[in-house]
Length: 195
Image 1 (cartoon, rainbow, N blue to C red):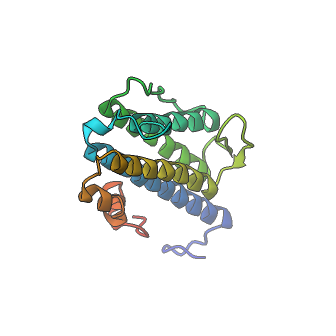
Image 2 (cartoon, helix red, strand yellow; image 1 turned 135 degrees about the horizontal axis):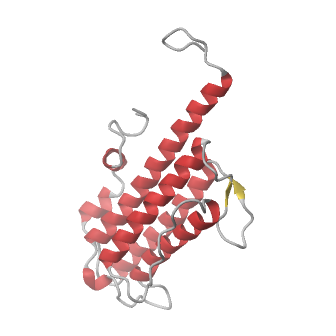
């Protein structure tokens, strides 16, 4: 394959470019994922934060602190060379503290993903937990991370509704506006635009 300047790219150079693009895309995808969490907390009625959920489930505060704390574990076990954010205490965590903690852990996870999927990082294995078998780094790592958080976002939305604190429609529809989220997270043209 020739570049614009007429030089022939080696397979190795092309592979590095693909990995770099994948790493950048993974970081932006995770940033959009985090933007959804932030939108939900911003739109949540403050009374819902520590409200007792039906049954024996976690409160909304406990769910968001869990999401943050799991991220810190992923970073600590997968990319220990990165600065691991402090864990949040669910019994005392405020929405403001959760938003700050989640922003910090999301940034760390995005850096970990960019390095791991970009092919230049020190992370070679994704370690979900001490009991889980490590996976080679790759798109499956990103899929697992997003799936974990989407599950818990669904719990939060359901709990808020069940407890009488439904989120505003702007938030409910806004978390599905990927073009807007994508642009807010650094991709000027949205999905597919790698400029």
